[in-house]
Structures are given as C-alpha cells and as structure tokens.
Length: 213
Image 1 (cartoon, rainbow, N blue to C red):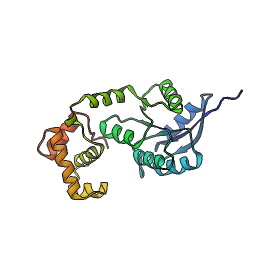
Image 2: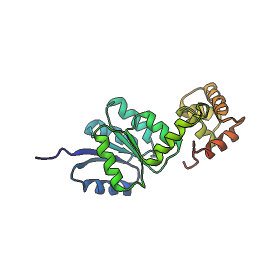
Image 3: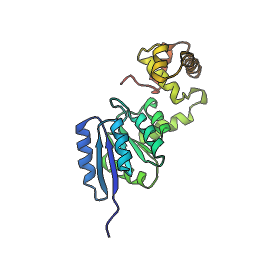
C-alpha cells in the first residue's frame, strides 16, 4: 500500500538553503518537495497553482516578505498550513507571523529531526513552535498587559529604531501621520517611557524588536 506523501513548497531567498532543505526533505519517504520559491511573490503564485500540504516560509526576503506572503496565501486558501523557518526569534518577527496565520514557527538551527516532526505534525493540523519561540510567547502572555505591544505597534517601533520619522513610517505602513502619533503615545505608555529613544532602548532590552534588519 502506497503512502500518501506530504507535498512541500519551500520558500527562501538563499539558493544554498533551498537546495539543502530540498535534498534533506526529499530523503524522507513520506515527503515530496514539489516546488522551490526564492521570494514571497513567487511563493504565493506557486502555492496557488501547486496547492502544497505544507509551505516552509522564510521571513526576510526581497520584495514580498514572509509575513506578506503568509497573508496573501491565507487570503486565497485559509486552510493552508505554513511553517515559518527563520533565524529570527524576536517579538517583532514572531507575532506578525503568527497573527498572519502561520501554523508553526521554527528556527533554522533546529535539528533536522525536529523539522521532520514539525512538518508531519503540521500536516495533521497541529500547531508547532520552536521551544525558544514558545518560551517567548509564554513570557509575553505572563507579562503585565500594559507591557504587551500589538503587532502594529511593534512595526511602528521597529521603523523608529531604523531612524524613520512619522511621515516615513506612515507611508511605509499605509497609515496617516496622526495614526502613527497615536501608536507612539500608546507605545510610550505601555513601556513607561517618554520619548522615541527610550522606547527603542527599552524594546531592544526586552527583545521586543531587533536591529538586525
């Protein structure tokens, strides 16, 4: 009796990673790699035509990033199962991906057996999180409510950390300058600070944002 294989689409902007993952997964008898995408736009198109069981999604790519691709795929096919596979584990990376609809979130330094198990679990419909990611989410849940920034507030603060002004932030996020100011007021209140510099410093110390962009 033939085994139904888990059909996998891999998305990453590094050719070596794509080839490495493809070769590694193809060695499993119950996996079939059906496509490789080097960016988010390609992933969305390939997902629409191939309908994979599982999509492995990098986060930071040129053009449409991983979160944007997840949103686009989930809008087309809400039942899609997407596992983020990245090197980044800050709140600024994890929260937007989970809110966009990712089924799981793994780090690239995970042992291959962990990746195999995660793919099989996600194919069954289970959520899968790297231990470090799960720990961050648990810490966030246990933190006082006033310290928890929303995904949008984190996006704003991430841009502030890059040196962007309110007008530039508004243009980047497609919101008004007034809305940016409102977000900043909420951020200051939640972090217990009075200005942009202190907000960025505090957020970096808490691991809410990262400068590695």
